[in-house]
Length: 507
Image 1 (tube, one colour):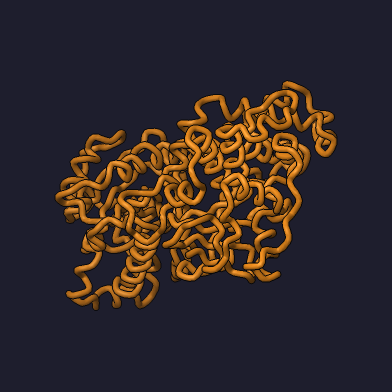
Image 2 (tube, helix red, strand yellow):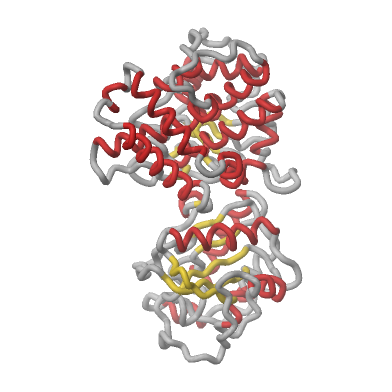
């Protein structure tokens, strides 16, 4: 069941009985009415409190009295989860079973539009001028246009998108904290907006009970499903649904609506029509680059990383190489957030405690749950490919791919999303070289099957052998004093773990 933590602004959707998005306690039945009543309750509690959303969906219904199944504290939290906080947009975040964090307001607003379109109940509602697509208006267009509009009026360094955030405990999450100064669209709100569009469109085509819709979309997190939940494909599916130009078109239309609404008229009084279009173009372009064209990367704090030992060494970007690995141990792909987070912690413990390294060696790790996991990350020298750690990123697939391949989706995540994103964002040179770990050292990594696969990828180059000269010298750069002895003392039994990195020094 869903655990709602009354001391925080969160509802955690790590649930094996995913009967609705906000089942707080076992006896609670707040959302057992029809699906339209559920989304209306969300709007009554503040899920659609912005001027543009009200112009599209109308004024919200009255807030109902506290249900008898909830005490006052629980009901207060319920209202806080749905209320839009301009100064703290991360409030109302929930942790979904796939490990992503989602803000509820745009999710429920999008589902309300979908249900109204499907049933025709009270629809169309208010018709703003100029006309807008209600599904995009209440989920992403208003907040996206407003974010970039505010950046124009204020500090040019003001954040317009992001940041991500982390829960305080991956096994018992209660509080969600952003990883930087908030913008109007932190990652959780972007996820909620994309989900609102996707699920609203789904409901408009085929109205189904919300409990079934949400359970089918987010999964249950208990490992019983076959394959990934649809929520882990949100970036791909949102990009496919929106298509080129659609997001820009809807942001432009919503800014024109905001120009005539009394609460927002002042924001746009000195913004001409051409500048409105320019703002919408930049907003759509930046959102697409961050949330559609680039992959979701689970930050270290989200998978429960230990601190880095010592002082990390910065990379000089853009890098010119990428080295593909498999972890070998764990030998099985991880297919859920919980399994992948556990694998990350296990690898980090082994690299730090047994090998004596400062941190997990890889730059990034690829799960079969649809996500990349941050190791050393974009900016710090890793310990993945002896002699070349400052030259390129080390990307490791969780699993042993000597005889089998990663899932097609996991292959495409790196080949078609991660690598183009790294180039576009200036972290990887456009003419980068991609190689398997075995080309750079005496190892079978990344396994015969995966190596044959990456031979077909853009940038692959078959010109290096393990006997090539080491351009970086002895390369003990990841060791702190005393750690070399720790590595020399590694026992034979523990060396069986993470064999893809065995036999080379970190750095």
